[in-house]
Length: 344
Ligand code: CP3
Image (cartoon, rainbow, N blue to C red):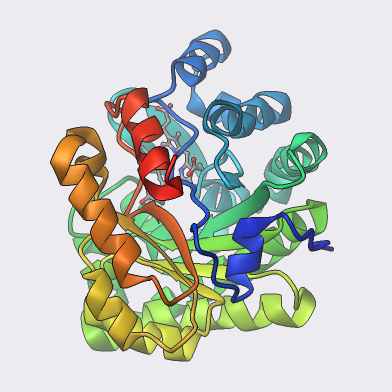
């Protein structure tokens, strides 16, 4: 499906090319730090309404591309549409975050009625964005990885140390494994359909991979992500996959070797010099500026950017944050960052 255009730089790096000036995009680049996002959100009445309205979601995906000319556009949606499609109720409490019900610590997901039609507007968004995106912009789809999605399904909301989910994984690994397998199957189908609708590459967000012990990490992070990567590669061999196991630390090396993503996302706790020395030669990396250095700007930003660029000088590299851009980030700091990376 993905037709490689020579000027789609981010896609070229995902395929292993090293560029002198790394392509740039920012996780959560469409969102609350942008006045044009806040305006549309107020008009439409909430985040989830935006995510399921393909015209609004297309417009929001394009907003940061128009404003900053990022090299990548990421589909505007959320990782929690997958549990919604598996039949759990989903809503967002203002100022608090996501809620999923009934929660799995007290209920069995087998009792839910699957609702795959809930994902149809997302595929519609992909088709609309593909048609509207500048030819040189790489279009990224995404999904949450099974462990991270499971932490929300089990607790019914975000949780600091994911204790309920880790407890279930230890006390009933068979039942928990069935849940992970079901999320894995839904995710493979969901990402395949995003690819068929027109994304160039996909990112797997394992935002809470860092809460697991090494043996649990093997079982609930590495195994399901490896299953997703191999299934997608079988169906869509020319669509690169970015794995982002946030908080994995030194376990990134095993993740790279066993999951075999086309590229690996690094969070801001990873020393870029260590990553460059430790990860397989030639493996494209993405990251990893601390979102707080972007808020601080000045010398803190300049030295952090310089350190990242120097560390990855001899490796395919996509410049990004180590996690999502924060709501209070000034627009002028994003412009400054682009100048620092692109030498403008
Ligand atoms: O990167 C992008 O711009 C693409 C869109 C995107 C969103 N969420 C939009 C969103 C992506 C890739 C995500 C991923 C996501 N969603 C993750 C993994 C990455 C990460 O941030 O660690 C997780 C854990 C979620 C679940 C989620 N969605 C939470 C916990 C929250 C509430 C916290 C918050 O920031 O308000 C959301 C809401 C959400 N998802 C918003 C956006 C733009 C904010 C919605 C709003 O209030 O307008």
